[in-house]
Image 1 (cartoon, rainbow, N blue to C red):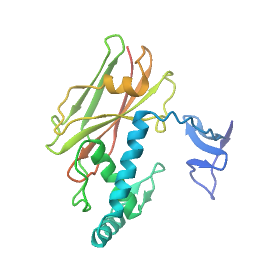
Image 2 (cartoon, rainbow, N blue to C red; image 1 turned 90 degrees about the vertical axis):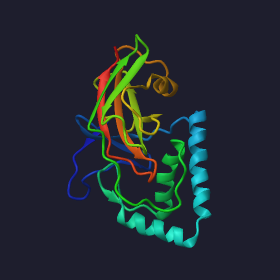
Image 3 (cartoon, rainbow, N blue to C red; image 1 turned 180 degrees about the vertical axis):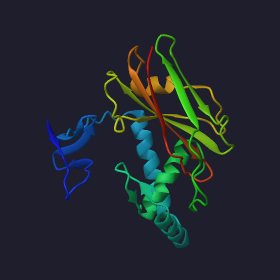
Length: 228
C-alpha cells in the first residue's frame, strides 16, 4: 500500500480512477486496487433502485416550466460533495435526490423545488448500543422534532475500535416518523442491515433531520460508541 503527499497539481483525490481507489485513514492518504463489490441484490437494494427509477420516470413527466424551476433552484442551491467542494447538480439529479428521500420516508414527492432553508441540525446526540440487552437507544434534542421533520439515522458498524474513517461504511438504518421524539430504539434497523450487534463492536451514528415539506436535510451530527 503506497502513501501519497499531494502537491500543486492535486490537493485531494476521492473515489476510483481506472483500477485504483483513493482513500485515507488517520495516517494519511493512500491508494489501493479497486475492488469490484459483490451484488447481493437484497430486498433493500431492490427497493432503492425501484425508488430511483420511479423518481427518474416522474422527472420525464414534468412540464417544461417545472423543469426550468428546478434548473434555477439547482443553480442557487449547490450540494457539498465528500471533498467539501460545492457542486451544482443537474436539475433532474436535484429532483431525484430530494424526492427519493421523501419517498423513502413515506411522504409525497414534490414537483416544485423547495422554498426556504434546510432544517437545523440536531443540537445534541447520544446513544447506548447494548448487545447484551438487544437495544440501541438514541437520545437527541430538540425533542420532539418539528411537525414536518423526520430523523434520519445512518449507521456504520466496525469490528475494530481503531477504525475512525467510516464515511464509506454508513448505511441508512432508520427513518423516524414526523415529529420524532427522543428516545428511540434503532436495534431492529441495525440488525436488519448488519445482523446481530456484538459486544465490543464500534457503532458510528450520523444523524440528519429531513423536512418532509421540502426534501431538504440538515447537516449531519456524528457520534460513536462501543457496544456493551
